[in-house]
Length: 142
Image 1 (cartoon, rainbow, N blue to C red):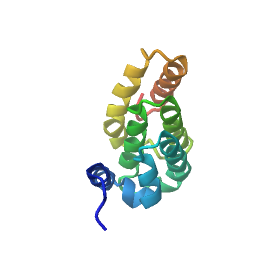
Image 2: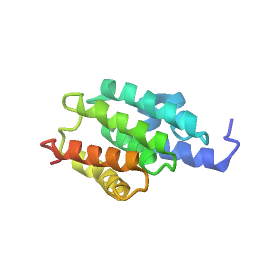
Image 3: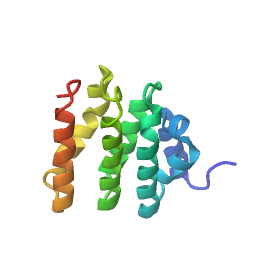
């Protein structure tokens, strides 16, 4: 059946384009794009749990980067913070961020996280700083 809301169709196309739908599945994709921030937060957690098992899959980094970018652009602090768990999962997974494509895939995130360094919320500033420093410590990104 066709989506009821045009935004659902756009979200689905976006999820398909980066591999999020294919790799993470319908349920996680729907949660990540939900209107409810609590559901988006749980979608970020589900994506973080699944990310390590996707290492080595084609477009896995692109899909994870899209999830993190959605979290970085979310107005809800808890969604942003949950999206950083995807990064932690990737960092702890050998080979996840070692490819030559890593810097290219993560560049939009670096800009978003840089902008978060001036956020009025201290937790957001600290989390963004931590994410940037964590990526800088990786040889493929550094």
